[in-house]
Length: 461
Image (tube, rainbow, N blue to C red; front, side, top):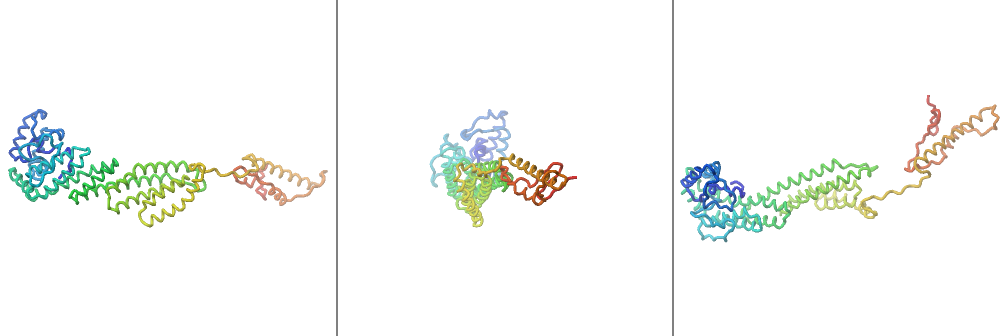
């Protein structure tokens, strides 16, 4: 059978032709002929079996031919018959909006069947507070009928009295009746997914309870497994997307990490928002419906743990150690396996002292500025002053050497200085700070292209 939907129930072939499901081949063909004579489908007279509460009823030439074809084949005829009303009289006007009480097994079989169909129609139409009650009624009634020998015999008799060219066998009828509760259970899957999407935990729990108590354990398990598989695929896609984005955007330089703080903060903020909006809700849905499927839950939590561990690294590279600690704590709670938990625990032990130190900052979001070391001269001006002093001193010493080696010089003799003495004098000059804590370069450029590199004097050609 096809999946049950309100549109499918409303388009039942017996309803399209305005017939009871008990009608034989001749009655079906006669009804189709009367409808075909109308050139405008809107002028076809209504029938007592139209049941406007089910929604719009379309009777175009194509739809009439399609309904006739469905009822001519055994398999599709069984499906249409199981989901429509039997008897010579249509159901009460209030059906299927109002469903009567359950009938016991002593009631006529056709009345039991009609009551089950009415409950199914009400369940498909009603999305309010009574929705689950009607589904429960439909499941309970069809479960009881499908296991009733009287019901199966009644269906076989209806098939034989129809005088169809191709008839369904008793085995085919029994299989169709047995499969109907499972089809109803499968129709609950979209409603369970909708409740999970709306984060309606109470309604989700009610639907799961109804599935577990449906009497169709195989079909119910299949519905849950299909939904879990879809949710796991979604979770895997989201986690891979978050990790790929972080790996592409995160970067650092341990010598100057502050230059990457803004970039890493933006990447981490985006990842955290994506986790909260897209990953965490899917994980909660898996937890809600997995029940005792511990392997499924552990697998899903492990994926989330890996994503959170990478997020913690992003916060660490942003100097947000408290947020990194929080992400690692969440990852540790979700980790799957001893090895994964041990690795995260080591990272958490390393992060805790940094987070505690950050809590002592005046503003935990802004690292304190390092204290500047006292400088003998301010900024680049001090360095330039030192260069000029060194140049003047070297020039003066050079003139003294020249004068002391000239015998005709009238000036009094002065002490002679060799190159080693000059070098000692230069090195004895205190080196000022340039404000950055760096030592000025150990060379100066002299006039006429002479370059002194602390002990060597070269002349450029």
